[in-house]
Image (cartoon, rainbow, N blue to C red):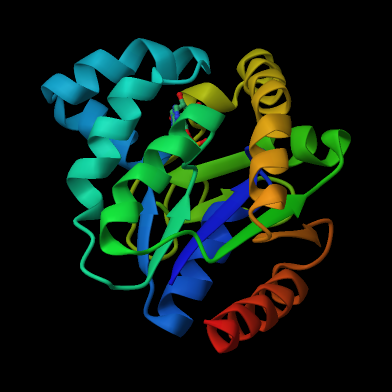
Length: 217
Ligand code: AMP
């Protein structure tokens, strides 16, 4: 099964992806995480992507699609895509990778959240540099300020989670999502979820959708 989690930055894609990939044994491919680790490691790809990621712009389609093609290594395994595709061009590239394997996207789950809530979540979000655990200074601060509860790593605010950059990322998302939504609706794989609820309630809905999509295959 190929499943896509679609949603604005801060809609809970990463949190849900962790839960679902553990529950269903899905391979989790998160393009934002990959770019951040390539940037931290100073690889050629990281150097090319760095300016875009730090300023909240999208990395050019050709670079993203090439990177995903290299990692998708399609083997019939179940995959959860998180943060990709983000544009119609990327969705078309993905369809192109899958077609020779007689595969396609089985489910696109869109986590819908009001703009004000997204802004609140993102500007109070903090992440562990070492293990990626996500905190929130208002609702879930680490026990010791700046230290991860799980691995003692350094907990920081992502450079692109500042208010000005968040606003830019949201505008980019809103502009590019409409055509993507229309495309997946026309493919009859699009489902929408109210993400303005507890992570557990959202996970329960997503699980039901995955069960349904798996039964329909
Ligand atoms: P995320 O962690 O998904 O919010 O992604 C962080 C940043 O990585 C984005 O603001 C983009 O700069 C870049 N990025 C991640 N995925 C993509 C993608 N599919 N297309 C273009 N840029 C991406």
